Length: 338
Ligand code: ATP
Ligand code: SF4
Ligand code: MG
Image 1 (cartoon, rainbow, N blue to C red):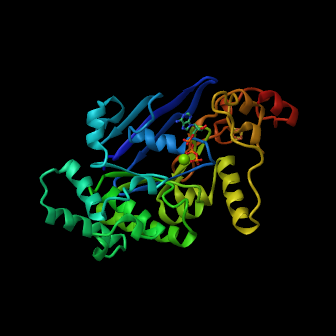
Image 2: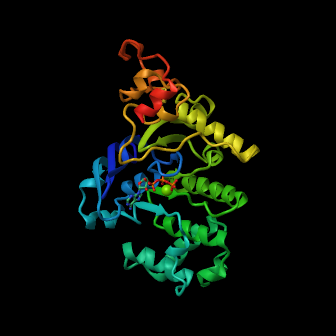
C-alpha cells in the first residue's frame, strides 16, 4: 500500500531578531494507512512545529521548505483555500489546549453540525446526528448528552469531545499533539485505548506527539525520536524502545524510567539554542559517547538493525570517519565546540 503521508526533508523556521529559529531542520518519514507513529523528544525540539507544519497550520511569519505529500498531493504547494478544504475533512488536528476550541455558548450538537456542515453543507440534520452518535459512542460519551453545553462535562469528557469532533469527518490522517497533557494517567490510558479503537474502526493514521514513552509503547506501531529539529532515530516501537541505537534515545528512556521510580533524573544539560545549534551532531555536547568526528561533521543517516533509521556516527560505516575521529571528545573540547 501507498503511504498516507510522506514527509521529505521538511524544514520550518521562525524569524526572530536574533536570527532564524530552525525548529524543524530536515525531517523525513512515511506513515501508512491505519498506522500510529509516536513522536517523542524533550520540550522545544520541534514536535508541535512539525505537527502543525504537516497540517499547513503554521503561524504567519513561519517559513517552510521540503515536501509533504498527502495522498499524492503536495500540501506545501497548495493554495490556502485548498489546504483549508483538506483540513478537518481529510486532515484532523487535536490540539494541546482543548478548552479554547469548544464554544461555551454552543451545545455539543451545534458543534457537530457546524463541523460537518462546513464540509457537507446539505447533509440532513438526522444524518449529522447519526454520524455524531457513532463517534460519541466510540468515545464513551452517552448520546443522551448530545444537547448539553461544554461546561456540563468533566475535563476528561471535554477532551474526548474534542477528539470526537476531530474524527467525525473521518480524516485519513490525524495529528494529536499531547492530547492528554493536563490529565491524570488513568484518563490518559483510556484515551489511548479509544484512539486505538478509532484507528482500527476508521483506518485513520495518527501522529501522536507526547512526552510519555509509556503511551508510545502502548499505543504506537512506530516511533520517531526528535532532537533539536531532527528525527535522530525512527523504527518499530519494540525495536527502538527495546534496542535503542541512538545515545539520545537511550538517555531519554533512562530518564523516563528513573522519572517514574525516583522522580528525579533528567538528561544532563539542555537542548541547544535552535538559532545557533552546535556543529556536527547537535547532541554532541550532551552525549556520553561523543567522539572527535561528532563535533565537526553531521552524523551519517543509516538503516538501523531491525529496520528504520538512525543518525549517529557510532552506527555509521567506519570508512567515513576521518583519521582520529573516533577518539572520545574531552570535556574542554565540548565547551569549545558548543
Ligand atoms: P513542547 O514539548 O514543549 O511542546 P515542542 O517539541 O513541541 O515542545 P515547538 O513548540 O515545536 O517544540 O518549538 C520548537 C522551537 O520553536 C522552540 O525553540 C520554540 O521556542 C520555537 N517556536 C515555536 N513556536 C514559535 C513561534 N510561533 N515563533 C517563534 N518561535 C517559535
Ligand atoms: Fe553521540 Fe556522536 Fe552519535 Fe551524536 S553522532 S549521538 S555525539 S555518538
Ligand atoms: Mg509542543
